[in-house]
Length: 233
Image 1: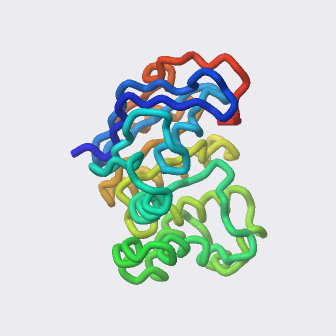
Image 2: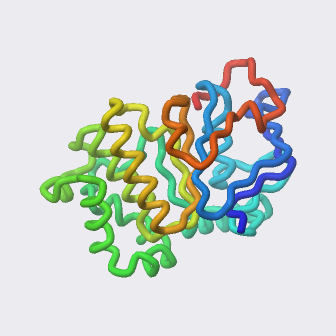
Image 3: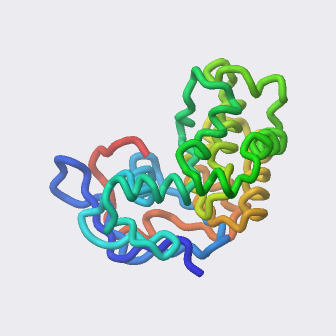
């Protein structure tokens, strides 16, 4: 079964005359763990935005779990993302005034499907935070008072709760030293494997690729060589 499939995708940044992404084909199987790498500014985050339905390609199709999300309305894309995709953002995107555990529970607030799949959401949030080695005395602190590494673990737990079928991680270890990178990746891979989720892990650090089933360079699937200044990736 294919979790993610891109066919003849083309996208250009606003106010740019030429396309920045031209991807004839890219597939990820259900349960597969893929490492995608490329230089900063090369379009990695743009591609993730398209996969999450935040942006829409100029042409082509993006199928997630058999659903062509490019054919959906904006509201339907938002609903699909909430139900089926766990995102770990480069900047984490936590709500700083909410506690760590309440940040983790947010997907279950927005998605009845994720809430149902979580079983008891609060117990599942506690399990994930424990697995990700966040001490219980930190669970009720506002996320904005946590360290970068602690916030990262909260962001990972939020992405994992409710067992989404697709996990997307955008440079999630960029702020960590090597030992903490290893611990984080091991935990993320273990949770993805336990849930049978497809994982697309994006980074410029190719040293991390050995932990994944497949290593893909964005330049290998993108027929456009990005040379002009572009949004940060």
